[in-house]
Amino acid sequence: MIEKTGPEPIYIQAKNWIRGKVANGEWKPKEKLPSESDLAAALGISRGTIKQAIKQLITEGILVQIHGKGTFVVGEQMEYPLAERLISIAETMIESHKDFTTRLLGMETAAADQTVSRFLELEQSDQVYHLKRLRFIEDTPVVFLENFLPKQLFPGLDQHNFEENTLFSIIEDRYKLKISWGKRSFLGKGADEKIAEMLEIDKGTPITFLEQTIYTEDNRPIEYSKVWLRNDQIKLTSILKRV
Image (cartoon, rainbow, N blue to C red; front, side, top):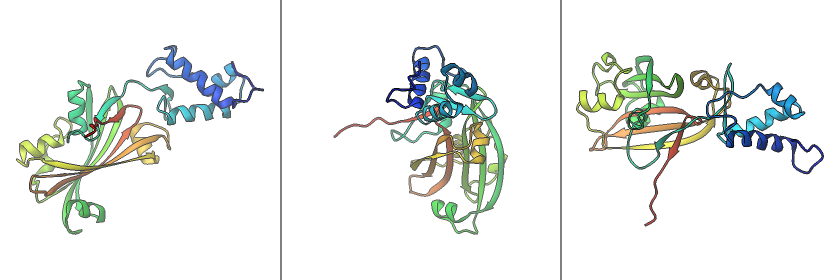
């Protein structure tokens, strides 16, 4: 299976071998791969070489490593619209008929820091709610969210059930603030130790970091969020028209 004297690097051959097993269905979505030691022995190559092949397939979005569990074939990804319309991740999950749950990790009030005050056009002494949540699809953590909202606009926000209700629905239904538009920015990066632990992936695994600010019709910013997405579970999509 591996031509050790040929011109093609051994780790590339190993990568293509793994890719072929995924492509032909021998290793199915969400299936756990054999250990690196077993794969290396099967191909007659070093563990370091197979590790290099797996690392590239993780970068390409074909495999994912879950800390403490092993390496898995990536399952079906949920599409999250990049630019067509302003929709939350929870709303996307509902529209996609995904069975998801939300875990509230914390809700506190604090003075807006420099970043939050800049996005929400506040003074650094102004109080904001800081909301932390983790969303799961089929018991797999796929999104970690941090949201910041001006306390003066949302009295009693900490009394709401964020495990049963979406933030957008609470803003519009309970506080009668119409969300009109938003600004998003995306950054690809490797998961740091904190995010890797939250999303149950290895440190350095490629993820997407999203920043978003939402506004009312009179261009008033009312919420700023930081979101970390698992690339093996959620992919960004966009429909573009040439005019």
